[in-house]
Length: 188
Image (cartoon, rainbow, N blue to C red):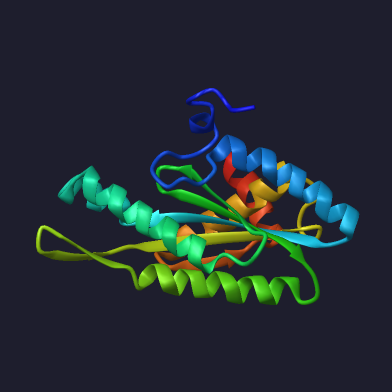
């Protein structure tokens, strides 16, 4: 049985071919349930590109789109087996690291640092100008930090926001104080 034309388009980002936010979040919950049954952990990396808006405003969206496609290819090339990758928004990507055992945090942080370095090394030429891009990343783990997909996503997002406060090309792991700080900011 074949899918109606266009159905795939509603689950995948047309520019990168990666799952979109809806598809990513659905698969995230399924993978967490599978990991719990196998007694494995998962890690969620949320990544936000820095400098994409500048590229779009100065060189145009064609250049920005080319940069997004290049970043997606770098993510695909560096993703460990079983990882789920998605383009969640214009300049935001998610990578779910699956079947983590042993030194979950250390292994995942090392992997994320390597991906961040690879993204920093991207250099494309547009209109005779060499252009690079940066990224910030937040990471959280299940079951260490969260018990379910929405909580894991929220905590990775808080870690991403903490990374953005530091500056471009920063990786932060979720720590509980980030949740406390978010509530404090919310009450102001």
